[in-house]
Image 1 (cartoon, one colour):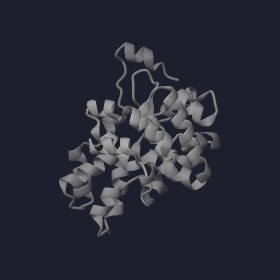
Image 2 (cartoon, rainbow, N blue to C red; image 1 turned 60 degrees about the vertical axis):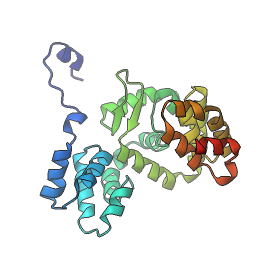
Image 3 (cartoon, rainbow, N blue to C red; image 1 turned 90 degrees about the horizontal axis):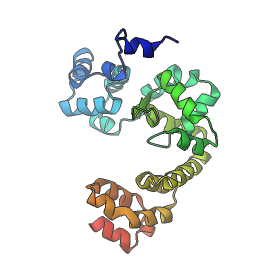
Length: 250
């Protein structure tokens, strides 16, 4: 490998990273309405740019999908990584080229919004996830670092959607157990919001209701009303007790 740290320290390195390559709103408009002549409204362009995170190839594929569609508003509102154009591209260019162990890692860790080594180890029953995450980042595997210490990551939104979609197709029986492992890990780490989300996703509504009842007021007092509302709306009617009614009403 090149001695990048030395070059950076001596100001002999010009770094062009993913954020520098993302299309701005103006550039996305030029691509979608200029090159592809789609005539999209500014709000539609904004939504697509946000969903693709300015990824140029992703916007190009979205544009191709939109060309002959009459239900543009509905498509844009529901646009995700299971779009056929996006799936075909990412499967052929990224996922199918990976070693089976790497592909398995990507699929099974797609159920979480944020990834870190110990969490991935808990999901997979492994002990080398931190190293694997670092390797995936170096390989530009649609992995976004969330801190300067390279401890927390997330997948690019579209790539994460694709992985979750493929997981549900390839290993449907593993989805609920993975959510339960994620719930247990987040609960041990005191990450209540994530624990609740995974309990709901696993169908463990009793555990989710108990956590919501014990913590909803703290989240409301921090201004996270939308989070609490999503929790209560995510529970089935049979899990709604007086405590949930109070949280929802508040």
